Image 1: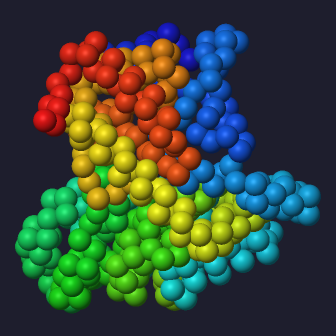
Image 2 (image 1 turned 180 degrees about the vertical axis):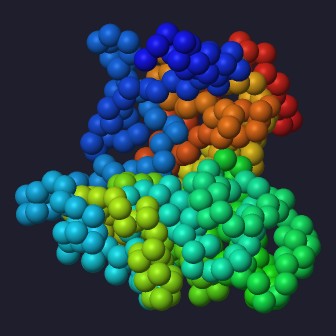
Length: 408
């Protein structure tokens, strides 16, 4: 590579640095059985014990002994990798059982497991225009990057509607002929804004204007509903949503994504989506661990209850102390900073001086000027850990001269 080409790359990275949104990857090692505790490896060989406050392993299932044993047992039985794509030797008994369990979870006829939640969205949405001629996809403006990428891959007409705005969605649905294929793509829990979509009302509009519905339940499966089927289960709406997408990488503590729907829809996706057809399937051990995790969470609603209790506790303490945070109806707690440089500096100080790991969230994940620290309190975050967090925030907020409005 010539020097001139390298300069383009160097300039691109420098632009990101200059905007204060250069991403720092924390080198950590989680401690099995002690989550949210971990070891942070600083530059060189220095180690520091930390508490993780930003993990997507919301319930600590990746640390649970029975899940670990399921993974080990599958490795002992079947080895490591799957050996191929799903069509060429990569469909194992573990994959089949997992898909059956996920279909039951969402009360759908079939489910299809893909290599990640991102791939599940991209592959499924991306193939829809091949299945539905002249398709128009209506996409919530705050949909995840994977959904946006999938819609772009579809190369069909797309219409963006204002976030959770039913009037805007209906006005745009009206502009398309009733008999033209349509799909409304949205999320249940929006992970950066901690709010929930008006699912029932969106389904009503879908019925009225002859549209399919596609919901991303990534930040809800395992954590909402009687058995962990997400917000659609909690609100008894799963039967009204045509395609439910989820992940195994958050509440279930593993890796992988999936979609669940009627058998003919799943058959079409598995037959035509290149993101599914041409990639090696997840390892049998991963499928086995995910299967165990889904089964365990179906039968342990107390884990979900504890998660939401912890989130409510942290919100109450932040509210009392006057912090600017998104006080939404979900388990996610975004603490607003509003400046990319300060957001990174606060994160640095929290981990370096207090052993608290909270990753800054900057553009393009959130709009410029809405930078934040995103806290995900879980069942294993104790009152003592919350005390430590609140004491640390008190110090750094004063140091960086950020406003608070304490409750009288």
